[in-house]
Image (cartoon, rainbow, N blue to C red; front, side, top):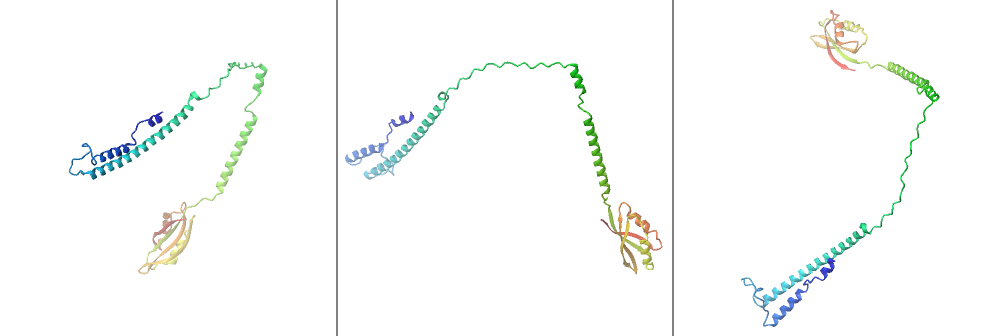
Length: 257
């Protein structure tokens, strides 16, 4: 597999050992010597044995770091490959080739078609008996009559109940201003004339005399009327009939009750 192949791969993990051996060899030879390809000729490059030695140490340290990172990468690859191998083995085991063969099907004989039973011809006597059966007989008719009677009874009870229910009567409260001709008009007689008006749906209430000016007072009287029976026009018409005492009639306030 791929894991075994990587194990036998010739990767130079011990390069730093060879670099140390090369450095020692050159140090034994008349001081440390560096090839022209490694020596920098720029103005900022270090010269002498000390500079070359520090450069070698730096390179060795960087190589060691790179070597460790490569080892980590190789270990990660080995773990991933081992996981893939385990997964492949599981998939191979669960493949259809490893499954048990399906049991043999049993041979089933074809079903025989069953002929429907032939309908027996009805005899004349049976036809007569069927005619005698009344599917909508007198029982149903009696039930329909009973249901109609109950419905009519309920309708009658509902009508009686509705008739007994009190009807809501719309009423209004009216405040009238009855003005006399002058200050010599008898206001008590004027009020008596107004209260003498009796109409169906009219009820007189409290009254008072309100000063108008120059000694003249008007009669302010309250009344309650049923809207369907008494209107404001009818009230004004009836009050102004007393021409000797009444000059005019005004509606001071009108409120629905």
